[in-house]
Image (cartoon, rainbow, N blue to C red; front, side, top):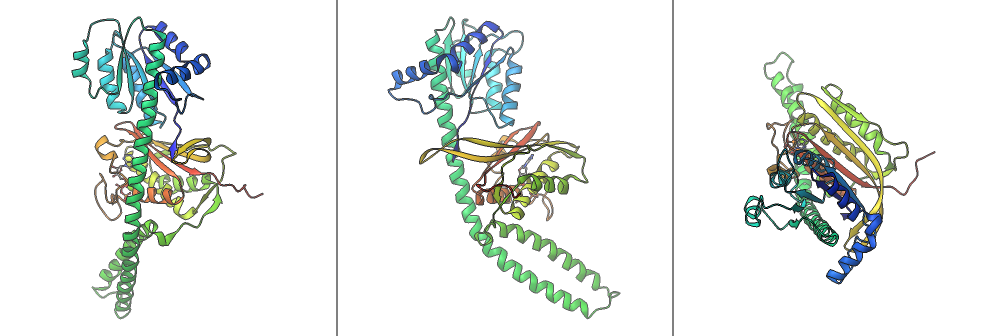
Length: 411
Ligand SMILES: Nc1ncnc2c1ncn2[C@@H]1O[C@H](COP(=O)(O)OP(=O)(O)OP(=O)(O)O)[C@@H](O)[C@H]1O
Ligand SMILES: [Mg+2]
């Protein structure tokens, strides 16, 4: 299921007049039909989104200000699609340096470089910036039609790239989860039975010993370790099809409160959470979903060893989603859990859902690398989606979306 994304555009220019011009040219109220007609003229077909272009245009007067806005938008899970960047933005970074930093902050962003000078030749820009398939160069003074054409083409390209990436990611996730589920179920059941056998025999052996016997303490410790191992096998069972969710229409609010209290009560991490009164119900297995939330909170806490704050936002979302069968109106509840921790390095992002992938010190209680695999499996079983946006050194946002229940709150 692919989300309809907003068209967020950022203009980075030290000249306020350019901002005003671009806002005027691209503002949806003034040119919706012009943009539609243009795309139709050029390509011969209507764009899928141009009927209701949802455009938001923001401004930055300096390169570093723009880079910060792009970083924050990515972290908030509401990224920019397109940036118009002037090649000269004194006194700070110039346009090419700005784009280099923007590429680090958000690799999907598309660019229009605006230039009136020959500070950089096309060859220079070509060698300085890579890859170049996401940028267009416009010479000042530009024509209205050039701005509209560049915006329309690059926005469409950004949407298509996102849809393709999301579809591929979803396919890989669901395949991985299915395979893991089958394996985990078999192993967890057999393992649990064997553990029960071992525990039973140890307890029987302990019955024949007095508490003073020097083997007694060792037997007690063995039983403790078995208990911890049984908790671990329980995690595996959640992956498996055997443990299908027992869904009931529930408010996610109480599960979030339980998870935050449980994970944060004895820590130096605070939490801000004020859910709206009218939050829709979701059909969830409370036990499983609470476990998923516990894993997300524990990751956030572990990412802020020196303390910090977690901000939880919940909202009802009613929007159009594009799937294989076309567009469909959908209602769902979005939960975003945002921390101020160490963030996730780009090289790790592709693997964080993999079982046993962890960047933490390894141990039975810490850093097994099972938390997010569990979250992904549980959310998938509830027909939901999970997305993680992170900026290293600044923090991480985990966004879970769950279909809203048809059922009303009990009186
Ligand atoms: N909020 C976060 N901030 C920073 N890194 C994170 C965050 N959430 C997940 N990660 C990264 O993703 C990796 C995988 O997370 P996951 O929860 O699956 O495993 P873990 O926390 O390492 O171990 P376990 O959850 O089994 O105790 C982590 O090791 C960490 O590198
Ligand atoms: Mg974890």
